[in-house]
Length: 176
Image (cartoon, rainbow, N blue to C red):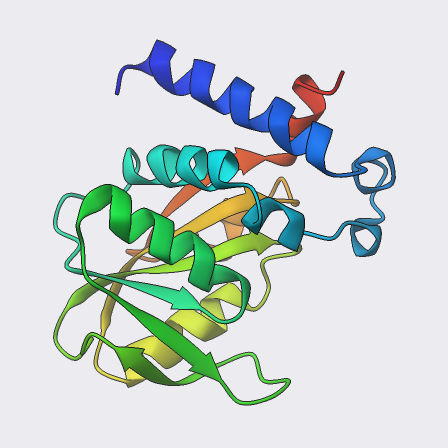
């Protein structure tokens, strides 16, 4: 999609998220007050997020891995949009690492790890490393909504590309 088409879609999805969620507290930094699962319940938002992420993924991605719980819906939407196979990245209760995958085998495949949202992003590198320990070549991390402006710094100096459908600044810019 063209840059103009992507910006129009980003604007439309940001406005819809803003209308779906009660964001004033989140825009002030109180992310805990936002029920991010409301985003998963809106198929228009999911389709838009999937299209925005698909446009940013490296061409050589072979498998998508949706990190439970929130990344599952976004990975499914992204798989439907791209036609790529996908798997669920399972975590042990309360852990920051992926302990196994369910679905498509990821061993030896170039994968994009998919999350619905990144609040601080600190756990993303740990999850990517743990997915690599399962045999995947993690070449991208795809995030639906980044609540932090410095997410890219989490992967500075690595070969992992970062795809973000919407940032906090996108939501602020389109706040009604």
